[in-house]
Length: 164
Image (tube, rainbow, N blue to C red):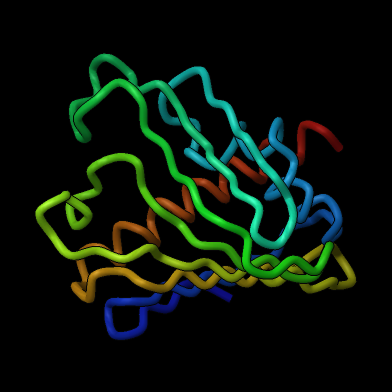
């Protein structure tokens, strides 16, 4: 368990949750749940649109806090397309940022990133293995993504715990 960064282009995070795979899968795929944790509690008015089918699209957005000037604009969103769906076992999707995250500015060549999430049942809940690939190849971006995902997982834990 923990965080691994590979060649600056991939982040792998393994984390145990005290909830079954069904709850974790729902947190990634049900709009109300996804909106509550995916931006790690940043901003306000979170919302998600999810068309959960292979080829279906998702979009998860927040309204930026007025005092947060780390990214320009009022809205920050991530969106993508589902590539593989195995309920309660695996989820694969692309990830595109509708916000300037530093390496996706219009003048730069950037491709969508991809995320694979494996949900593995354990005696006490679920081992979640999260792989995020397609980062720009510098250690700074990968490290920032790892920190952001871990913060999101902290919020996810709180959301699931309050519903238990």
